[in-house]
Length: 99
Image 1 (cartoon, rainbow, N blue to C red):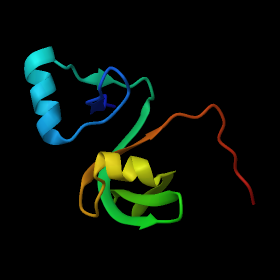
Image 2: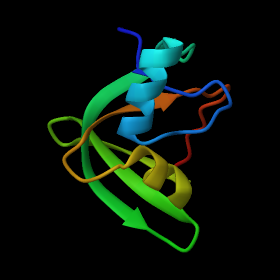
Image 3: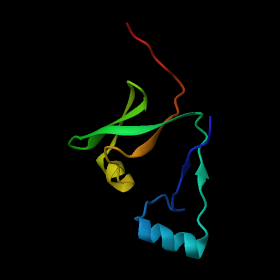
Image 4: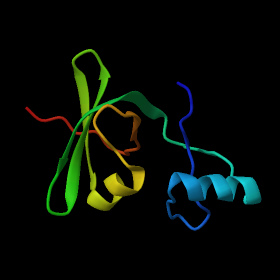
């Protein structure tokens, strides 16, 4: 599976596109690879904001949807919107199944 690339600041903060462009120009910002092997590319089909967290639904195949619960701040920082291309990155030590 191909690696996903994310642009990040060295201090862990996110910047808008204009600031990222300036930083890349002056500081040669590089893309970062992720160690998580389960990287599922898809399209955001829904973003539902709650009081502190949002549910982001990503369709990774016809009728196959993965839902992530992330902070509202992360949704804003990443400018996530319905219709955007996105990656669902899954890094877990356990997978539980119930019936």
